[in-house]
Structure formats: C-alpha cells, structure tokens
Image (cartoon, rainbow over all chains, first blue to last red):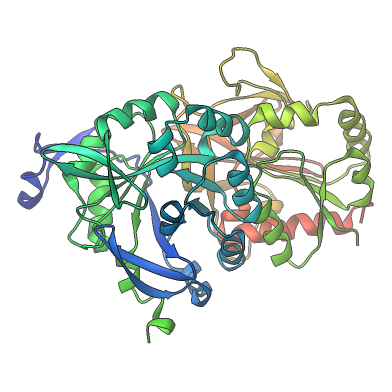
Length: 265
Length: 211
C-alpha cells in the first residue's frame, strides 16, 4: 500500500506531479562515497576540479563507528588516465573497515573484477567502459561469474536543454548517451544496482536532485542508489520517506562530520 | 590447531574480505582448490560472492562429492556464507538464460528460489531473529548485511536457526545441522557482530576432532 504526501514547496517546483509515494518498506543504505586520486582522498565540485581532502593512508577505523552501511570507493582518475586501480589500496581499506566495499574505476575486463574481489571488494561498479563500449558481453560474463547482485552500473548525469545525458570519466566528460537510453539497457541487463549521481549537485551540499531522482525512479526496475548534494541527515530522511531507493551516497556531508579530522588539522 | 580452509574454486568470490576477517579473529587460513587439501584444515568456509552455476559446476564433481560425503559423516565443520549456504542444498533456480534447475551438494534437502518474483536483489543490513548459540554475539546486535537475489527453502525446517522479514515474507537467514552452519547474510561485511561469527566458527573447529 502506498500513502501519498505533499512535499515541501521548495521541492515541489522540481517535480512534475507534485506528489510522490511513500514506501514504508524502504531500508535505504547510507553509503560513504570515497573519491580518490591515489594516494589522496579528493572531492570534486560538480565533478570538476579536485580538492584534496586527506591521504588515503590516514583514514581511520573510526569510520566503522559512524552510521554508514557501506563504502563506495571510486578512483576518479583511473578511467581518465586509463590505468588500473592499485589492489593494495583496496586491501588497505579492507583491513581497516568491516563494512561492504564497492569498487569503481576503469574496470574493463573480468580479470580486473577478479583482482578487486581478491583484494577485498565485495561489489564492483562499471561506468566509463560501458558508456564507451556498451560491452554487454562483459557484463553478462560478470553476472554469470559473480551473480547480478555483485555488479553495478553507475553514471554521472546532468540535464542539458531539458534532456538528461550521461557523463563518463569521473563525471568530467559529457557523452551523447541519454539517460533514458541507458536506463533501457539497465532494465534489460539487470545489474545488481544502478548508481546515478547528479553532476549539477555534486559537492554542492544544496540538497538532493529531486527531479533527477524522480526521473530515474519512474523508469527503473532495479534497485537504485543516488548521490549528489546531500547535506544533512534530513536529506537522508527526505529520500527514505519519499523514494524507494536502495541507497544514498554522500561524500562532502561525511567530510563535514570531521571523519578525517586528524589529517584535516 | 590446523588452519581454516577457504574454498577457492570460484574465481570471483570475495576472498580478500573473507581472509581479512579470519586474520582479524586471530587465525590462519589456506585456500582450498583441490579436495585432497581438505584433510589439512580444521574447518571449511565456503565464501558467498558468485553465482550458483559457476560454483556448482566445480564443486559437484565426483572427487569433491566423495570427499564431502566422507567428512560430513565425521562431523567436519563447514561454514557456508550466502551462496556458500545455498550450494549445500539440492538445487537452485539460479541459472542464466535457462529453465533447468542446477544441482548443489545436496547435503540438505530443499531448493534455492528467487527472493521475489522479479528477482530484485536485497541489499543492506537487516535484523534477524536468531535461535542458535552460534549466532550469539557479545554486543547482542543481530543486524547483518545481506546481498542476495535467491534464498534457501529447506525441506526440513528444523535446521532453520534464524529468519528475517522481507515485505511480509519470512526469509531463511541461517541454518545449522550438527557442525554445518550456513548464513544467508555476509558476516565478513557486518562489522564486529559479523566477526564474532567467525570466532564462533573457530571455537567449533577447535573443539572438533579435526583441530
């Protein structure tokens, strides 16, 4: 059963219907997005430019005590530089953190995936390579070997002239692929999850991109994870109570929680 | 005491996470890729990431089945995680592009079926209702991380030691029969309460004749 709620005026303007369903069954995960350009944890703004946050090696196990369900490790420079993720970085994270770790960054073949799992990843996510190649064979091979639930697709998305386009290479390069087209592939291929991030809201901490979430939610048939603009626990609650999202990712929000306080000082 | 064994016939299991968890509870492990190695370990962990078809293709070969039959009769400790629990049952509907059921180890009668008609995976922490000392932890925290699209349906419900609720359905989250334990969730990803399950399994191994 769905109940309907009128959502706040500031958000109403961005939603065509004005009302959205509340799913009480939702058990949305809170995911720490760890963007890196090894050896640094970085934070882009609108996926453009990189601000160094701290050194990867200074991350402390205190993150285990925060209300975080999962860690999403994204090596933002891997696809741009066409280099592979260093498995030692994943192994180091694995030793420190007891939570599930998803890994993304220039995964282009089954051996890349295997190496990530051997190093301590529990899931992998593919973005640029799929947008550039639409290599359905690789995805199907990975699904068969790892199970659908262990392989996600992700995309950075922005609206241009009213149409949502997918971005690649860590959200830096606009592609000609419309989000609607990608979602058709996603629904057909059925990866474990579809992770989508708003380029226009990334790092801004101005609240979630409700219009984008509504757009994707109404078209996707698989579990969804959203990222971009999260600034407070209220944002998590807003999304929990109004959308059937599997997870919400945040980076800047957690940075402001001073989880990296020792290095920031 | 002999090391624990981690079944490593599936190229894509999350070996890094499992082996780190074993180290964190202060024990050694070796990877097991051949049935002859089973005599060198005190207990076997069957990791969870992968697909039923790829794991079943390897582990249901006669040489593996013979060795498992022999060890289970002697009460050998086995800890199956997620897919590692599912493979203990007779069959699974998890097969890509086909309609035939795949056979598992058949240690327990029962089958593995999708958690929901649309096969949508379940992700995240869920609270289970435990009914076994094996699932006890010092924090009394029964929340564990799930990541699965299929679940077990044992014919003998007496082996079920916990369940969780998903959209008003009860999903089997763990089983136990003598020294064979299975969990649908991922203790290796479930913070300290998950690590304690590895400690509990280690205790079982220590007191078994295979130590």
